[in-house]
Image (cartoon, rainbow, N blue to C red; front, top):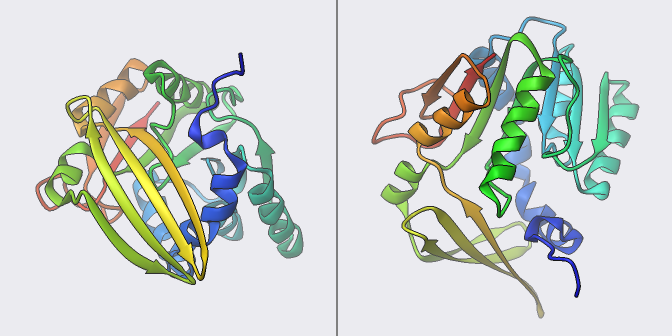
Length: 249
């Protein structure tokens, strides 16, 4: 019997979806996002930073441009190759490691860590998602901070649409969404159209409320965990755009 493969282990998904995940408008927003991230993380200049699920390194590279030493971790070799080429060209202090985020751990090596744009909650087994937080806790130095950014259950419920479509570069992206297990998980179907070509993907993410995610961080050993509604540091309330939780070791 073939081993079970989770959706995020598909090279085809990450290859085909790259133009959507890293659309031009998202790339151009990176410097402003890093400005806000650094404010919330309260990182000193010349800090060591871990970027989990770093993708093509858009945040890693921008942090390195500002003098931080960055380690980016991702499972997609093509993304890491692109990130390394850019780092080499610009002579940036950034390393990129191909490894699953639930297994990466480097004890007391970092002053800060980030998990951006719903890169948390991938694993089918919730214990694996908890393990990611435990590994980051171990990897941070005393006083180090972790930032996790995703769609919280509360704000997703407010804006939920079962289906819609949009243009992203050369693609038309059609999305269908289904709530599972009493709002515990979100099942997604993406249909990407480009001319006569069609790609169809399905994936499921765990959903977390602010209270649940903060509790998970405290269970992992963090001393404090605080929720925000955006990278601007606004409250996590009925107008929240994202769920940003910053935990301190």
